[in-house]
Image (cartoon, rainbow over all chains, first blue to last red; front, side):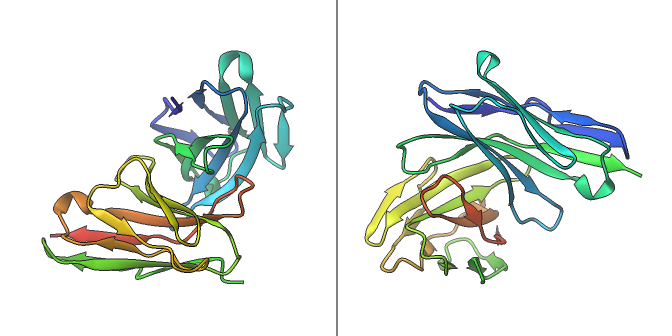
Length: 115
Length: 111
């Protein structure tokens, strides 16, 4: 069965600090996708990244980076030099291939960046 | 390019009333989804569709119905609204490459 666990319910950091959001997943499939979505206070869901299970390379996009480790079933998300605009709820999600694109979301981590 | 459009943005219903949440996408995506997001929780899949004329239940389908007569539209129907259906509802579409594009959401309160 699919499961996504985001153990951190809420995190607060001071602006310019680095912060890592944890994501641990469970799946019986060997082929799957992992995602991160951002939900700012305005409420919409913004796609950040998709990673397939065959590609364990870490990815960096500006201040955002993602660490995918199959050995620990984790897909952690780091924001460096955080900014107030990064304040949002962040969701990690998992989709097993050949499952009609169904995505299972974690409960989300609410990130507060304090000025 | 409008993307995924949900209407209405907000709605208050009385217990037992019915309503339809509208969702339309202009990206010609085959896959469409309805999720609900309860406070402090992640998204739970209500129904999904892999193409016009095909729908299937997700994780929490009870109390809801859907139809998919066209590729563009995927309305969600609540027949007898209950307080437990108070939530934010998100519609999403996907071109079947595992990226879902979300609408802005509909905030529903059942009182």
